[in-house]
Image 1: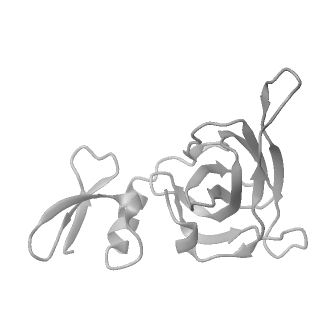
Image 2 (image 1 turned 45 degrees about the vertical axis):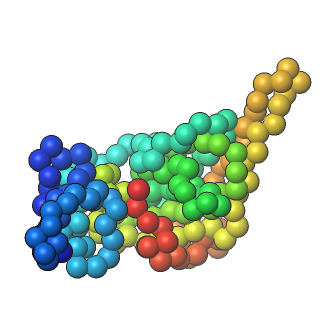
Length: 183
C-alpha cells in the first residue's frame, strides 16, 4: 500500500491505495504491525479523544447476568479484556490508575483475563500510545449463571485487584501485544 488517509465522514475508516492504484477502505482498528503501522499510529494519536473515565466500555458486552469488578491498584491506567474460548472479546473496559470499575452484562463462559497498561490511551484504536505493556492471568475465569428459588437467574460476580507487575500478589504474566489485540 502506498497511502493511508482518513476517509471523509470519519467513523474510523481509512482510505487505502494499493501499488496498482486500487482504492479501498479499511477500519483503522483492524490494522496491525507492518508498513502501515506509522499511519495507523498517527490516526490513533490524531483521534484519541479525552482520557476515558473508569468503567468506560471500549467493547460493550452482548448480554448476560455476570459481573466483573476490577480494582486497579497500579499507578497506570489499564484496559481489561475478557476473551472467550473462541478468542472473541466479550468485554473491554477502561479503568483509571488507582480506581475501580465494574463491567456487567456479559454471557456465561470461560474467559481469559487480559489487560494492558500504558499512557495516552486512544479509545478508537483500543491501545495505549506510550509504554503499552500487555499481560494475562494464567488461568481462565468461569462465569456461570444459576437460578434462585424463584427461578430468577443470578450471574457470577468476580472481583480482581490488579497489582503492579512484579509484586508478589500479581499472578499475571507478559503476553505479546498482538495476542492482546485491539478492538
